[in-house]
Structures are given as C-alpha cells and as structure tokens.
Image (tube, rainbow, N blue to C red):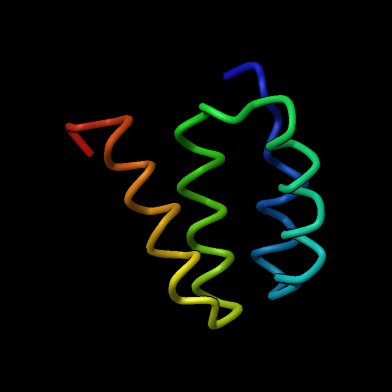
Length: 68
C-alpha cells in the first residue's frame, strides 16, 4: 500500500480517536478509495460513538472488498 497509515494506527492504539480522525481525514482527501483507510475510519468513528457514519464507512469498505 502506498499510503502510510502507521501514524493513524499509533494514535488509535493510544486511544486518541479525535486526533486519528483528523489525520485520517487529511489522508482520505487523496486516497478516497483505499480499503484499509475506509475500514479504519469506520472503526475510529465507531469508537467515537458516531454509529451512523461508522456504518456508512464499513458498508463502503465491504462494497469495495467483497471477500472481506
């Protein structure tokens, strides 16, 4: 994967979900169709109790990668 999500994952691992959301939003501007980014954003939104948005991102991820 060209996109480096390691900083976002580090923030998530430290329960810094607001910060990780800010960073992943920046990354998403250039990589809107990246499965891992979309799936991770769904997880971050879930942890922020933004359930409807989380479902949207998980659904989008599933539609991109049918074997997941």
